[in-house]
Structures are given as C-alpha cells and as structure tokens.
Length: 419
Image (cartoon, rainbow, N blue to C red; front, top):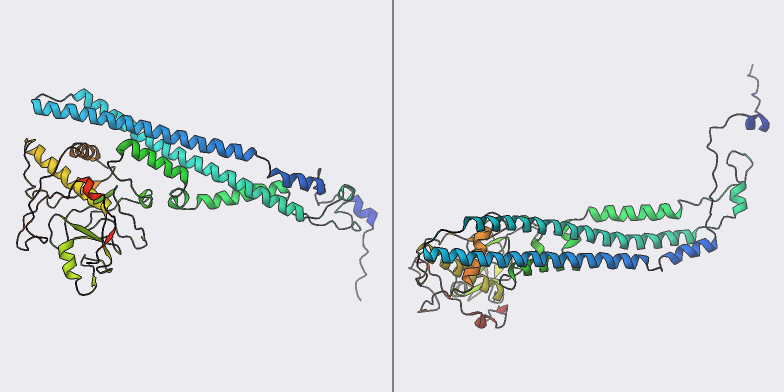
C-alpha cells in the first residue's frame, strides 16, 4: 500500500516559520542614469593630477638631496687625501682623528644613499598607484554605465523570501568594489615584477641615479649602466673581459662600475695598448693580434668559454672603454710610485701587478680606489716608444703604455675595423 501523500505547508504557515535566508537589504543609492554620469565625470577631475605632481616634486627633492650629500663628501675626501699626501711627503704622522671623522661621514652618506634609494622607489610605487586608480575608476564607470537601471520602487519592494516575488536583475559588484579590487589587483601585479622592470627605465629613478653618481664622481667616472643597478656582483673575468656573461644577458652596455675590467689582452697576455672590442661578446683584444687572426675570415672568439664569432666588421674601438683602461693603468702606476716613495719616478710598471685587476665595487677597499682615482687625475703615464704596431712575441715584460690624451680620444666612437 503506497504511503499517503504529504501535504504541503500553506503560504501562511511558511511565512510564520523563522527563515534562514538573510533579510534582503536594497541599495540605498542605486545607480540611475544621473549617478552613472557623475561617476564617469570623476575621472575628468584633476585631484589625482595634483597628487601626481606632488610625488614628482618629492622625487626631485630626493635627487637634489643625494647630489648635495655625495658632492660634499667627495670634496671632503679630496681635502683629506691632500693633507694625507702632504703628511707623507713631510714625514709626519697622519691625523687619526680626521680620518676617523671622514669614515664616520662616509658611513652616514652611504646610509643616506640607501634610504633615499628606498624612498624614491616607494614614491614611484605611489605614482603607479595613482595611475592604477585612474584606470580602475574608468573601469568602474564603464561597468556601471553598462548595467541596467533599477527603479528605487522595484528595489525596495523586492523580497527574495516571497515565492511569487518578481525576479530582480543581477547588478554585480558595486562600483566601489570594482574600483578597490581593480586597484589592488594592479598593485599586486606591479609588486610581483622584478626591480629592474619596475624602476630601471622610470625617469625619476634614472634621475636619482644620475644625481647620485654626479655628486660622487662628476664626469671623471662613467655612470654604471641601468642593466646593473639591481643585478648581483660579478666575478673576476679572464683577460680581455669587460662584462660578466649571463645566459640571458643581451645588454650591450659596457660594465664600468661594480665590475672587474681586465687591462690585458687574452692573446698576448700583455697590457692593452690599442684595444678593440668585439661587438658580439664585448671581449677586448690588442688590435694587431686579433686583426691578424681575422684577416682572411671570421673566427670563433678565442676567449675560453665564448662561442661568439669575430670578424673585421665586428671589431670596433670603444672610446669609453679606452678611457677606462687608461685610468686603471694610470692608477696602477700611481700605486707603484707611492710604494717606491718616489713621486718623480716615471718608470713603467715592472709587472708585479700584472695579474691584478681593479675591482670597482662598493665592497671593502673602494675608498682607497677612489683616492687613487683622484691622484690619477693629475698623473701622466710615461710614454713608451713604440717600435712596431705589434709587440714582440717573445717578450714577457708587461708595460703600462700611454693611450693618448683625452683630446685625442674625442674622435669617432665605435669605429668599425674594416681595414
């Protein structure tokens, strides 16, 4: 015998029971056509433009600050070094207190540079946040403009617990939710980008790096390329190397700062006199040696571990590197003279430092190197009489040669070796 059919509760009984469905709360201010128009007009207001201007002004002040701090320290270092050199010549003891004060200033300025770097990047983050606010505001206005109008009477009378209640169109998230989620999503994506992508090409960060460099070095030292602002320090290269080799590195800039530059030719193992660079791998060779090797056809780069090709057309003179090699050789000669206690000794380097390369890094010893650079500014390397364009193959003596005055180096850069 089939069970008796169950009776359904009446509508009145259903209304009398406590409902687990939350009470519907209609929008207090549903977006009608007028409200949608007002939302669209928000992006035309200039409030965000003033915020953007304040952020740019802040970054300019930070750049000016780091320039002044670095310049004052550089001037102080030069003055102290002059007094130290004079004390050494006169045979008197150096001022230990002055040196201690200088080291304290150097420590404070390094910390200031780090803090300003961080603040500059944070300000750039805020600039992008402002831009993302603009974009998210436009998105919210566009989505709200495409949503149907909901009459206030319909929204107020709608009760989702009533079985016979008319259905209400789905409106989606409110404009404020669209705006907030849009800004957050864009900022999350921004924060996940690499530092190199986020800052290296931003005009404000480039300005900060230039101000920092110019204050510390002026025009004496080329500025570190942007491709190395956030990269790890590289190891010491083999002779002829002017850059580190990363598998994904396609940068064509010469690594001047925070990089080791060898001043020896990997073919002759002698000091470079007339260096040329292969544009494909950035390795440097003595012109006479490498031109003889590529006279008939292109060859594989003779540097160990390099698989790039070298031809006459790929060899060129890089004036920036030429000047850098000259400064390194001059500073090495200045060190030699200082060790010999002879300021007038113009002997060429005797080879004791032949296997040493100059590490341009912010690690220990950078202050001493900066001091040598200042002394090298007034030092002229001895001229070595050149008998032929190619050094004798049997000679092992390493010589520091004069690469010419700066005026002679102002000729055409990146000259292709066609002849």
